Length: 280
Image 1 (cartoon, rainbow, N blue to C red):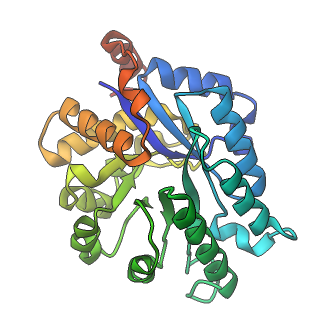
Image 2 (cartoon, rainbow, N blue to C red):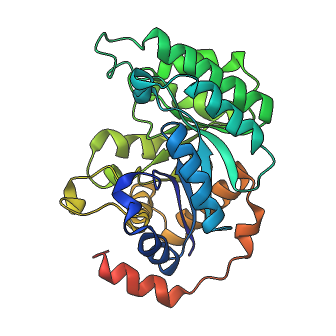
Image 3 (spheres, rainbow, N blue to C red):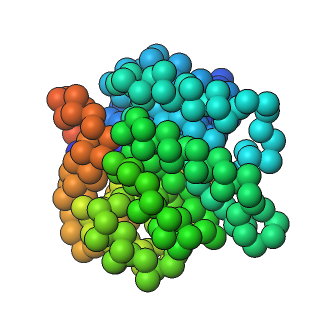
């Protein structure tokens, strides 16, 4: 089985001192595809550097997270857009992300005007380059889903989708994808989303270095966590881990256009040993 982590912040300082170890452990666990999502201009640059350092295994998504719109530096938005345009034909760059809106972070119950402006500019960058968009939508999913048809975005991924569940038919009809991570093991609402969303619209993530509860309490988040996520999805879907892993892998390749990953060799025995170490 091959596994993927479609959303992790490997340019974060929490990974800086042990990035080689984290990536190597992912390889050993057959997590064959990682997407390093950026938060701002600095992490966009670092994500590209990491993708160049680990080609064919680690890919970059560039953009400005809504949380970072409170502390934008002069010209940061335009510089990030310029970086996206400059690398649009770079095979290491696979998406514009993490971008979006967050009504809970603004303090007002609504996304700020700056959030809306930056998100609009990031969506235009995705539109003009033909890159997929990886979207943060906490507290603003309905608003985002309503506005997306105004843009000609090639592909849309709603990261860590949680609610409202009533949007799932629209998400499926439009061909959007969602990602779910370690909370699949212990959060009822996320498990209900997984039950309702077709496997053909689902990918796995960790969102590291975010820390988790349940069986991951007090553990440092690594891509290897997705093995547990796949097992949880298989349980919810009442199918096998291999069926889930294969479909999610194919979704990853198709969504990000990284056909070369299909040719990677994988060692089932290695996966078994890693799984034992993670208590699966």
